[in-house]
Every structure is written in structure tokens, then in C-alpha cells.
Amino acid sequence: MLPTTRRATLAAATALLATPRLAVGQTTNLKVMVFPGLANLPLFVGQAQGFFAKRGLAVEILNTPNSDVLRNGLAAGNHQLVVAGVDNAVAMEADGHDIGILIGGDSAFNAMYAKPEIRSWVDLRGKTLIVDSPRTAYAIAGYKMLEMNGLPRGTYEVRPTGGTFARYELMFNDPTAHASMLNPPFSLQAEDRGLTRLGSITEVLGPYLGNAGWAMRAWARQNPDVVTRYLAAYVEGIRFMLAPANADATVAILAERLRLQPAMARRNLALLTDPRSGSAVDGRFDLEGFRNVLKIRAEVLGTWGGTPPPAERYLDLGYWERAVASL
Image (cartoon, rainbow, N blue to C red):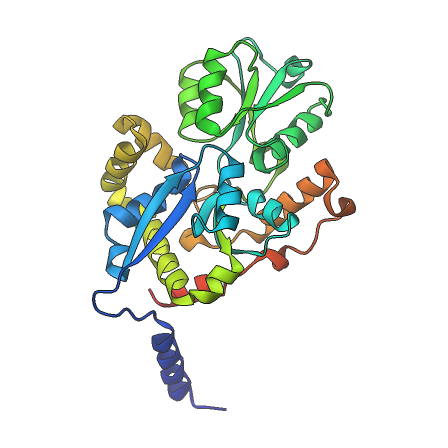
């Protein structure tokens, strides 16, 4: 066995070799597609604090109108990376696309909201649930939540309408849009405007991985240094936003990017920084929460014959491990 000091020296050398190297003047353009919302704060911070730029990355954040554009665009190479509900990655794999999940995130803080006159789950019987895509992500979680509260499929109508922003607007402007899953900042704004909060995903379904980052595996294999640099900057963004000393600066970034009043931005940041239920430190992957995502998809849609596959088959976390080691 090598002496302890020599093992430490070799480990340090290995870590140094694993650190991404950047040629002088080299800049790589990256397009990252997201849904508008709180989950994008690490990207906002990474841009505002120069964490991407110092690694030679010019990151463009694209807001998707719906999950179909997000998934199809990634498959077509219109954008290289995604940060969004991880069940969309599972749906891409089910459609025959070889995706790799690169980093974890958070539960997405999604909850079921209904019009003010609806005071309980059973009041949604015969009403309309508006969703993004009817067979992915938070729509599926919503079906399971309704089922667990006495409303199986068929006892309410499902209407696809688009991403969270569109659904938030419909909840106030369409009398036939009775309920929807909403995430921050829209969910907090909905509460302030009088919508009824029936319950969150984690309150009803237990551990749940909402947002994560992923890419096409072929692209990641062709660009391992770019992926590692991107993830290192992303993790640095997470560390910055979770640090109490940076709260005021982070609130300012959040307020500007999501067009929020400072008080509302601070309420949103409190969700991410909650040590029990907030954003995962360094983007560490929540395996238990992801297994629950797969389990719910299998139960609700009958995918894989009702038996979920091993979660590990979707994961490509080696880039993240190298990124964290480089910080």
C-alpha cells in the first residue's frame, strides 16, 4: 500500500489533471432551455457573477412555451442543455432518445392550486385540470395526487394549455380553468391573489425530484470539457445563492430576472435556501426522489408494464463529480 502522503499527492495530481483547461481567448456558446421560474436561479447567478464567463462559456437561457418544444428541441440540437422537470428526460428516453441526467436540483416546489371557491380536493370532481403536456412531469404527479384524494382519472377533465406562466394566467382569466399545478414564483403570487392551495407534491407523494439538468448523451460525450465547465459554473452559482452572506445580492438578481418585487423575491429565495426542503447542495442528485418519479409514472401511465426501471440507467453524473472536484 502507498504511504498516506504519497496517496494524497497522487490524489491531488489526479484532481489537477481533471480540472478543465481553457485556451486563451476560447469561448463556447451554449443554449440552455428552461421553463420560466425559480429553478433557474443558479443560471441567473452564474451569468451575473461571471461564473460561466470565467470558464469561457457564453450561456444563453431560452424560455420554452411548453415541454414539447423543450424535448424536441434538445433532440434536434436546437439547444444543448435543459434544466426542467426531470420526468421530461424520462419521457425522452421512452421515445428512444439517449439522454443523460447530469445534475440534480430540487423538488420544484409544485403544488395544486384551485379557484377560490374550490376548498377541497373533492370539489374538483367534474371540474377541469389544466396541464402542460398530459403525459409528463407535474401533470402525472397531479393525477396521482388527485387519485390519492379520492379523484381517479375520469372524474375530472384534463386540458393541455402550456407552461406554468400560461396556466397561471388562465387560472384568473378562464372560468373553466379550475385547477393546475403551479411552481414558484407563480405559486406564491397565486396564493396572494386568493387561489386555494390544496397541497404540494412532497406533502402528498413524499420525496420527489422535480428539476434536474440533462443533455443528449452523444453531445456530452463529444464535449466532456464543456459539460464539466458548465456544471462547475452551475455548482458555483448554487453555492453563491445558498450562502447567507449573498442573500441581498441574490435577491437583487432574482428580482431583476423574474421581474419581482424585492419582498416577493426574498420569499422565493427562502424556498431554495430552506435546509430541509430547498435546493440540493452542489446540485447533488436525489436518487430517492427520482425513484419516486419513476414509480409514479409507472403507476399512473402503466409505463414499463407498471414496473419502473432502475434509476441508474438514466444517470450520467461523472461530469458533475469532476466539476465538483475542480472547485
